[in-house]
Image (tube, rainbow, N blue to C red; front, top):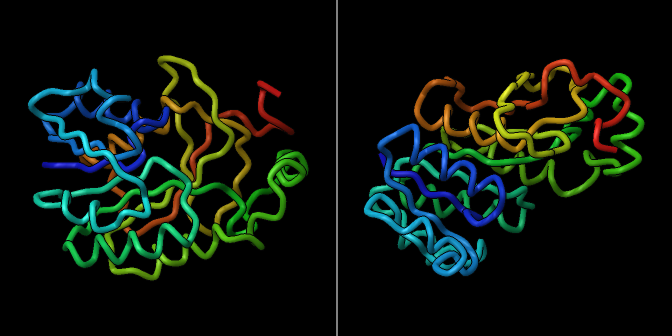
Length: 212
């Protein structure tokens, strides 16, 4: 299997890369701005490094040969998501994992709601619901991951999953947990298809994240 990671030089992109290389035999195409220098330490037989931006869809398409799944390690707006979904369709790539944030469906509730909306605004009135709708209305085998406030803690990969239509209450999650969940989606340990999932850390139904 061959996987392309878009935005591979970011924190979650790097963590997914490390997990995939350690836990699978998949080949990787690591795509992003200046990755040939920023990710030079990842160069090996299983890895191809491609410099480019999200807007350069011709370059993305040119590197999709043999790719079975694409993960975008970035919360993209509709200006990026629209052309990207078309590019994947044109290239015949079906499996697509993308990041978003909670409240695109007004699903955040409980003690966390007030703090979250004070700090993110009224998400459902912005562009991110449009970006999500582009993915959901496509024929891709997608998984949208609505990830709550992020922090780092090595070894903490605990995840609580909520589905579209269910309330979202978790205040935080580790980047390590998100990365492991993405890796598990890629290798089939997590079996979700054409779903929008909320990801939080179990037991964090708090007023705000612990690090604020």
